[in-house]
Each structure stands twice: as C-alpha cells, then as structure tokens.
Amino acid sequence: MITMDFSQRENESLTDFLYLQLKNRILEGSLLPDQKLPSKRSLASHLGVSVITVQNAYQQLIDEGYVYSEEKRGYFVTELEAFSSPESAKNHHTVHNPEENQQKSNFIEGIFQKPNPITQLSQDTAGKNKINLQAAYIHQELFPFSLWASLMRKVLQESKERILSPLPPQGLLELRQAIASYLGTFRNMQVQSDQVVIGAGTEYLYSLALQLLGRSLRYGVENPGYQKPAQILSAMGVSWQPVTMDSAGILIHQLEEKALDAVLVSPAHHFPTGIIMPIKRRQELLAWARQGSRFILEDDYDSEFRFTGRPLETLFSLDATSDSQGQVIYLNTFTKTLTPSLRISYMVLPWNLAKKFHQQLGFYSCTVSSIEQLTLARFIQEGHYEKHLSRRKNHYRNIRDTLLLQLSRSPLAESFTISGKDSGLHFLLKIKTNLTEKQLKQALEAAGIQVAFLSQYFHHPDKIQEELTNTLVINYSALKKEQISPLVAGLHQALEGRT
Image 1 (cartoon, rainbow, N blue to C red):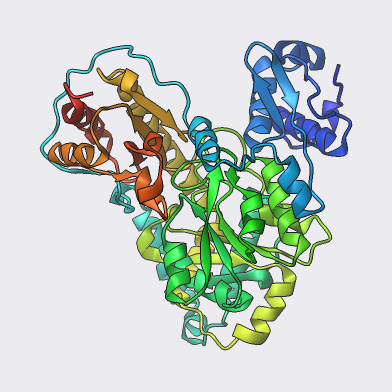
Image 2: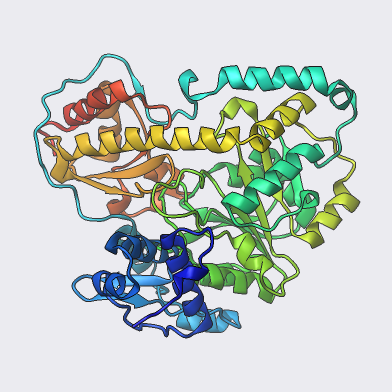
C-alpha cells in the first residue's frame, strides 16, 4: 500500500499533495508502468483522507496522462518514455498506425464519449433572435468597467512621466513583472521579466516568433486546428504542413516524416477538439524538438478556464527542467479572460531566444499603449485579475452546466454525443442525422442558430471522413442564460423528424 506523510504538505491541499506525491513517484520509477494503484476507497482508508480527495488526485493524474483507468479493473500507471531517437519514437509510439484511416478512427473514438441519455422532454420553442455560437465577444456585465476605469484614472494621475516615455520593445517592466509573477503562481512557470514580450494580439507575436526563428524553417500546424497560424505562415511566405492528430494530440512520427523544423501546438486544450495532450505525448514532442534543435510554439489558448482539477503543466515548464537550450516558446493572451478588444497578448522566450530577441528584434516598438499596460499591471498586481477569473469561471461553468443539462433532457438527446466539455469555453456536439452537413447547416440557420462545424478547421476539409461531419463547435462564451432554452429548441426544430 502507498504511504506518505501528510504533515509535510505545508500550505498544499490534501488533493494537491497526494497528486504531487503520486506524480513524483511515477516519474522517479518507484511506481512502475502498468502497475495497478490502490482503489480510491482502500487508499483513502489507508491514508486517513476522504474518498473524494483520492478521486480528485487520480482524476488530475488521468487528465495529465500519468495514470489510466480501465472499467471494472481500476487505475494503472502509464508507461512514460522520452524517446532517444525519431526511429524509436516511430517504432514504439502507442497510438501510431501507418494507416491513415486508423489514425482518424482513433481520433474519432478518443474525443467522443457515450451519448447522454434522455431524462426529460423539453417543450420549449425556438426564439426569434439569432443565437451566435461563433462569437468571440463577451457581455458587458462580465467586464469590470468601474474598477478598470478607476485603475486607469490612477495611472493617468500617478504615472504621467511613464505614459509619455518611449516604450521598450518587450513592453513595460511593470506588466512583464506582473505576468511573470502570475505565471509562477497559476502555471508554475519559473519566468523572469526579461523573457516576456508584450504585443497587440497573438497574431502579431506569431509574426515576431517567426522572424526570430527564421522564415527558412519548415513549420507544422495541427490538423484540425485554429486556422490563423497557418494563414500567418502563408502570409509571411513560410513553408508549412498540416500534421494529423489522434486522441492524444499531434502525431510525432509525422513531424519527422515531413522533415519539419518547428511546430505550433495547443497542448493544454486544443481548439476545436478539446483534446488535452497527455504527459507521454508531451515528452515525445519535447524529445523530437531536442534531437535536432527544433522548436515548439506552445499556444496556451483559454487554459485559464479549466473546470476540473488544477492547471496542467506547460511544455515550457517541462522543457525548462531539462538540459535543453530552450526549444519552447510560450504564448498566451488576455483576449478570453478580459476582452478581445483589449488586444494584449504575451509570449515567453527561453533565455537563448530572449537574448537573440534583444540582439535582432530590439529595434521594434511595443504595440500596446503605456496606459493599457500600466492599468493591466495594477489589475494583476492588486489581485483583481485572480478574482475576475474566478467570477468568469463561475459564470461560464453555470452556462455550460445549464446547457448540458438541457441538452440531456431534450427529445433528441440520444442523437447527441458531447466531448471536450471540462475545459475551455467550447465543446463538440456530434449529431447523428441522415442530413448532409450542408443540409444541417441550412436547417440550423433557418432555426436562427449560427455555429461552426468541426470540418471547417481541417486544412483539407474535402478529405475528412464521414464520421467527422455533422459535428458542431459549441462556443458558449457569448451565450446568455436566457438563450439556452431557445438554442436547444432550435436544435430540435432543425432536426425534428429528419434524424
């Protein structure tokens, strides 16, 4: 039986301490690959903690890929291996299959779970107003206007000289320090302010990163995936290739087969599939990067909105604990957590690239105004950002839970299959129907629902399998609670009598 001393946990919660202890023992090898872990009840009884404490610790380990579960058998340790060569990765990759159809099948089976049962029939009718499930804006009640205005007034009164001074290329020190401190607390990233670069939007920072790494490199992008990175690569005349994904994320052997030098990934919560890259695949990806001085651009898109467990460890952090020269560039934005119109994003460079940035790109001017940077710095430093995130998470959790509940009670619940609902501000809704995707889209538009399809995020949508069609990307970031019943009724209206 596993034993540990909880008196050493200091300020950590029981769940976090148990999770970290088990994780460290897996990494050290004292818990062996495929070794069965004690049941939740027996371990809880042995350690003198609640079953829910053990359950939450196990779930976090499962989410990160350190542990896997098998129905009616229990919990087991995942076999972790950082491959020493691309050939060994290719030969031992647990999900690799040379047949493309099998890869797609794994992807399909991995992201979708069993459909929700019908528990109650909904009698709502569709509303007349259009419901936009593609919108990126937030409602005004979710932005702290009064507080933001108060902080901005203080900046104008107390920092006149700073406002009128030229901006350093990386952004103001106050904001870079605030971001570094926040990343240390929230993402457990050991970052110095000199590694942080502020920019007006992630797109702009991507262009800086491409100039820093070199346009002669060959880049890979996730397929399916967010389309803008590929558009930026094309606009800058950079060579790129789509890289297939399975249920664990981007396929490592394809990076080697396509002779790529760098790759753009979103491991914490992939858009649009919602896939979370497990620790084994992360290790494989880092091993690939280290073998040829290759690079990874890690987009930590909406990682703040994780509704179960603690935040996942970043590739940047995993890379920083190795002897690597620094293969990972970390990117994030305040677009989702504050508002898209604020246009403040940041990237964190490993030290070798931070020095190169100063030498080669130090002539650039920062693209975010001093007033906004100083206001945001105060917002973070005074603890307002953390409270704001907590309120936003509670709001979105409530929206998500209400939507999922009503979907489960709708007449067509057995025709819905949902995935990716535990993190981020969207999930996938697979609809079983005899309609073609074009017909389904027309029916939804007629019902007043504007929504994106998963097929729109493939770089070669004409080649995707039929199993991936009729999958809706439900972005609920702009959804109001009073719109949920009309939305569910609209879905019913679009499919009624034709599924």
